[in-house]
Image (cartoon, rainbow, N blue to C red; front, top):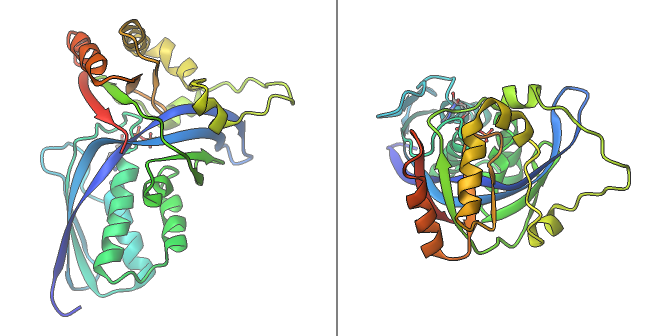
Length: 281
Ligand code: ATP
């Protein structure tokens, strides 16, 4: 590359329509069965590459997030430059809309967008399968965002993916004014053994609306607001209302937009909670 090139792209959030903890690996990582659904709440990124020596510069205007290698977007750019050895400097501008620590996968989606964007700008030097492996090394939710499908079943640590037909819902996102550390949730999670004959089929649970998030047991006692948000959404007619991922966001699924908007209005009085009505995308 003799001159610079740039690209603007969007990084959508995800919600987990269900999340079932199946076991624990010897290294402490939990094995899950989940359904990821992309939704229309998005961070925006602008990428710029110029001939250089592999420097990465990130800025996150209006956000308190770190702009160094603690940020997943920064780490993704470094990983890409390391793998390709390209003589490029990378500049990333990241405009956050997805609240950090909200269980919405914002950091993972930013990382996936940086990997895809840089690969596109550089003429696709990294094959898709290898990009997925690079994503998995950055975070368990990154491969879902690289897959570029509306919804997928995730197994293992969430990186073994199978696309599924997304259900047609409007989602009300209720985002509390605090984030929750995923690590804290898993450290406090108590795995209850189920009988050996209880085989969990996430695809079937999705279709029959048997939506449930095992991680709620940890969060509900520490953050009563999460339970209250669920109760309000159910009282407003949500077909399901649960915490996304490891929290703190709670979502309600509605068949009709008008019901979703009415529920969103009802949530407006909840202290500090940001509310958005979104679609699967
Ligand atoms: P998940 O559901 O994927 O476990 P999450 O949606 O709860 O994660 P993220 O928004 O991905 O959480 O952020 C988790 C933590 O990662 C934040 O507390 C933040 O300090 C750190 N982080 C690093 N980079 C980013 C980024 N680009 N956007 C958001 N958080 C980031």
